[in-house]
Length: 313
Image 1 (cartoon, rainbow, N blue to C red):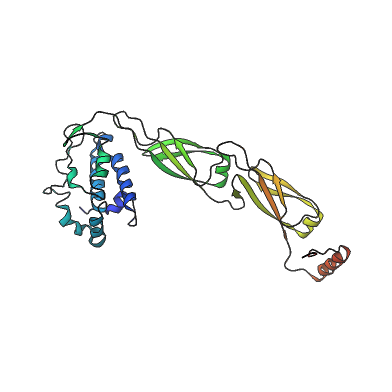
Image 2 (tube, rainbow, N blue to C red):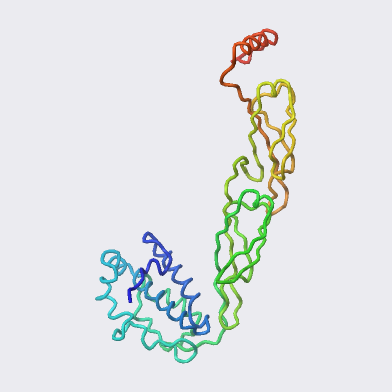
């Protein structure tokens, strides 16, 4: 049977750091340990595969050899790992509370026995050189989930259903979250061992940019183009707002880059609930081409309404 790429087994890239590989191994080993999965054969197979992958790329020297030669380069080092004749193999390993046999000394990894002792201390109580079954409870691991929202979902808040470890979880994202916000969902992480409490689920939020709106802190900004005539004579224009369409009154003589403020129409603060403001900035758009009649009218307009915008410059 063809062995799978250990990087793929642990869900990391070939550029992953030692710490990233260790974290990936620890998370998967705890998740798929047979004692947490009613001694499932499938969990046992997956657990063996995860441990074998870490034995390869969790060791700096073996990782270099694997990167150069693939699994063929592991034959001399693993001493029959995964085969019936090797001391480091999984033959004879039994999961459950009847004689779990595991030889830590055959695993070195990047930090000696550290990561294996750390993981399996949740399942075993150490007593000298003898490892005996522990009936004490162990808490489940915390899990992370990346959730992407659009701009208005972050503004309004949203309820969603996420699937974690084959469980569908109803969650509520409060209004005001931003990219990088973290939401804790207590008790929805990995299950505890032997009745231990479940871990927590942490949602890391990413917010997609909006086509028109820009967020600055809890304020929202919008640029609105107006014509020369609208700026000179004044007008009322319909604009998009975070809560729907709204009217903007542009007074006569409005200059380009004038901003109008709508109080309390921004994002709510996550801690205090105080909303930011909605700022609308107008920009005067000048036509690129005008006909001869319009030119004459503009010249007459300039004559009748003389100003020097560069006075004092």
